[in-house]
Structures are given as structure tokens and as C-alpha cells.
Image 1 (cartoon, rainbow, N blue to C red):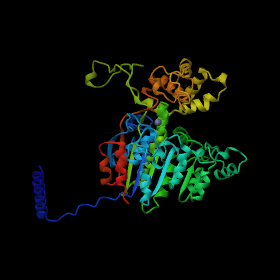
Image 2 (spheres, rainbow, N blue to C red):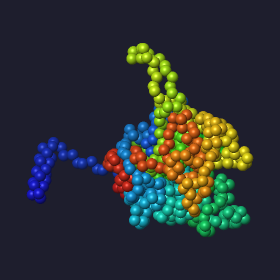
Image 3 (cartoon, helix red, strand yellow):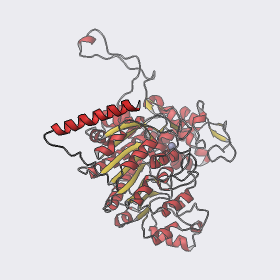
Image 4 (cartoon, helix red, strand yellow):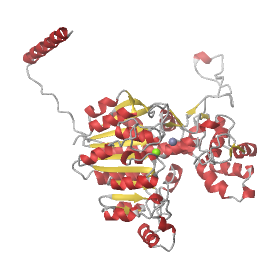
Length: 539
Ligand code: MG
Ligand code: ZN
């Protein structure tokens, strides 16, 4: 066998020498292009279905705000490569955002709910940490909290995603140059909860009253003061962010930033203090790109996932529009550059979302001009969904979360009636429910999955899920939102299969130097996505 291989090899060498000799001019092989910058954009929960919602809205809604129907996804797909990627964690079928971010960031398999550790529990170096070693600048931007699973997976190493106090310390120790998000509560000392404390006074002054000052730390570490010592510029509002120069830690909310409906409604408010996802991304890129050696930046559109968990289609559409706006900005910035790899993907799909045809409200027959229908009306047997639904989804005025937490739950106990819930839902959305439907949304049962001490399953009485209750794990109140979604499903032509994640393979869009994007154009696992991004990043 060895001899035959050798002969074949020798033949190949001989013929290529001959070819070279015959060639009129010897071409030097092109130098592989240089990938100085890597920007990874993660749509949390943004499966193909969620992208499909955006595409349907952009291209089919009669009054689409994307006038030409051309989305950022159309754009990157035309300029780069597309692949499809499995997302599962080690030994599992499905993944959570922590393990998925870890796999994307490190290229190594992780276990469920781990942060920055591989399947054996060892510290796994992330692409952000690798970039730092190469002398590049680094950044994390998220519209959730900076200590939440997705950003954490890129710059922290903890046994569980819930250890957000410890994650904040890791982020600071990692000296990430630009951090823009929410989640101030994990960065300030426990003593800040005392209104008379020095820490409280200092934080009120620094933040100019822009952010609620309340700590979730168990210790008295003041990571804000530590950040100042490490030469960070601090930002608690949009003005401060715009004025920041160099390393910047921007924490614009006590917990997460506003959802995309609120962001869209307040965009033109001159008193707005919280930057949009696009504005944070712009600040990050402008700051990081000052480094001649390049940068790594992760941008997360994190609340696509939350709308998915709640099965809140209208909010999810707005979250996808926020992603679209941000991605368009990044593509604008990258236009004409040949030194930047952009990777756009999701960590998993959330909700098992889809438009679906149904037996509800069957279509009436109508005449068609064509010859095939000369003697026959056009009358499909089922309701295949009307495109006007897309505009109605866009017109939702409040997320389901705000409908319950901000409005319904703020009513007195006696006022928390089905009639009042129906009134609020019918004012805030284009899909009306009856009092009877509202009563089903508010119905409760003994928790069939009660688990003492469990942070999500530890409540004895929970909203009543008639089917698939085991897949609606954020029981306590959120399931009212999922129940509301079920009541409007027929009107929306929408089905949701779960309150958690699915294993639907997610799309991977890349743009950049051809040698950097080529490996992404196939069937991948997210560890491959991470590895390819790390390998592409030159010093
Ligand atoms: Mg996330
Ligand atoms: Zn999720």
C-alpha cells in the first residue's frame, strides 16, 4: 500500500512540475487575507423560524416599516457565506444559552448551564481571551445584562450561569475594554442598599440618577469603584456613554435593558437615558477600532429569546427588527473593509415558533381572472394565514411581560379580574380576547412539577397548562403569557410548541475575507463555529 501511495504521489509531483514548467507565467499563490477584527453577533433564540418572522414581515406585511423588504440578513447572505449549525451541549439534545455561548466562544463542548468551562469542567479559553493575548481590544454588548449567560460565556468561567456576582468579577478581571449593557445590581456593594451609605451617595452622583441603585451582591465589593481604578470610563446613561473615551463600562439599567417595543417607542424621546442596541454597538466599534492590532466584539440581541420563552409573537417581531437595525449598522461599518470577519448566528431556537395553517375562519370563495378558474371559484380548504396579521403583530403596544407585570399585577387584588385582563390585552394588542378567554389565562392549578427550593419550580400554585406543562418551566407568572399566546394563536395563525428551547439547527451567516468565511459554509456544530472564528483571527 505504501508503495502505491508513493507512486501516485510521485506522479502528481511530476505532472504539477510539468504544468508549472509549461505555464507562460508562474502565478504566486495569493496570500491568505488578513482577519484583523472579528465581530460575532448572537441573536439569542434566533432560530430559522425567528428569521423567517422578520423576512415575512419585511417582504409580506402590507405596511412593513422595511419599505424595500430588504433585510440585513438578505444583505449578509449576498455578501458572504451561509451554513447551518447544531447547537446541543455535551451529551444533551438541547442547549441553554450559557453552554451555547461557551461553545461559540471557546470551540469546546460544554455541559448545560456552564459558563466558560468545557465538558470536563476545566477553564476553556474564549475567543475574547485569545484576542486579548494577540494585543487586540475586546468588547461585549448586550441588550440584556452584561452578566447574563451569553456575554458571560465569552469572558467568565463559572460552574453555573446564575453566579452573576462572580461573573461580574470575572468580566472585570478579564479587563474587557468595552462593556455596554444592563445589570448594575451585580456590580455595586450590598451596603448600597442603605440609603445613607457612602457607596449609595457616590453611586447616585456617578449615575446622575439614571439607574435604580439596588445591589444583589452578598459582599461589599464595589466593582464600580474597582473599574474606576482600572481606568474605565463609566457610563450610566446615553450622554455619559457618548462622552466616554477609551475603556468603558456602561451599565444602563438595574437589570435588563428595555424590550424592543419600548426601545422603539422611546427612540425619539429627547430625555431617553438608555442607549439602543445599535447605539451601543456603534460606540463599541468606534472605540475598539482605534486599536491598530484589531478587536474582537460580541454583540447580543438577547431578548429575541425572552419573547420566544413567553410565546409573545408581536414582541419577538420587534426584537428581530432591533437585531435587523443593529446588523445593518455593523454591515454599513464593514462595507469596503477586507479585514473583518462578521459571524451572525443564534445560540439556539426558542419556542418552536411558526406560522401555521388552520381550520379556523375558513376562506370564502372568490373569482380569479385566470382561465383555469373560469368555471370555478378560488376557495382553498383551510386558512393559510392572512398577511395583514404581520402588520397587526407590529402594532402591539406592550410586551406580554409589561401587560402582566406593569399593568395587570399593579391593579389591586379585587381588580385583577378576567374582565380587566381582557380590557388591557385588547387595548395593547390587535388580537382581542374575551372575558372567558382571559379567565383561562388566569386559571391556576397545584403545581404538578413542584420541586422544593427550585428557583423556577418551587411554587405550589401555578398557571394551569392543559398540555405539555413540563415544557413551560418558568412557571410562576410567565406561563400566563404563554396561556395568552394560546388564546390568540388561531387569530395570529401562529403555533408555539414550547416555553423553552428547541434543537432546531440555526443559521450561520458570515462575511469577510474569503479564507475566513469559507469554513462556515457547511453543516456545523457550534464548537466548529467557535473554532473557525478563533482560527480566522490573525495577529
Ligand atoms: Mg442571552
Ligand atoms: Zn432562552
